[in-house]
Length: 144
Image: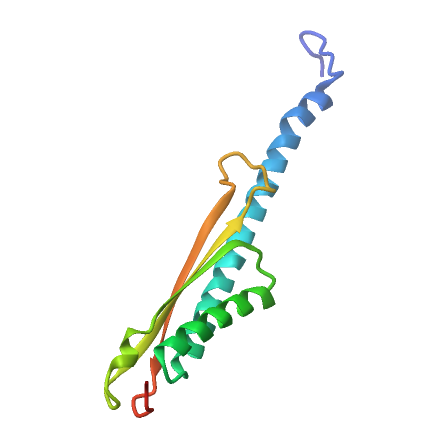
């Protein structure tokens, strides 16, 4: 097979590398971003569920708030999640209901995930991951 004009292909590998390596690095960074976000979201949901369950077995709203906050932060640290800041909000207002009435306690956990080490264009330096879970308070258990 003859070519109509001679082609010199010297340096084409360098051009391919200049185009391919940054694209590959961006792709890997986006995979890490997605994975880190997904695993942190799952951990935050688990922490919220742990906190809600812990709060629901307490006898007073004050104790429920304190124990829920502790349970959420412990759950996140046990799962190896590194948040820039953690905010735990406990809605224990239904502890004031009379014994025999249905009541629940809700916990919202917010974790600001640090993504600044990725340095991927379009990816923010941090992302807020939030989850809310509820747990029923025992209908016949005395509350304070």
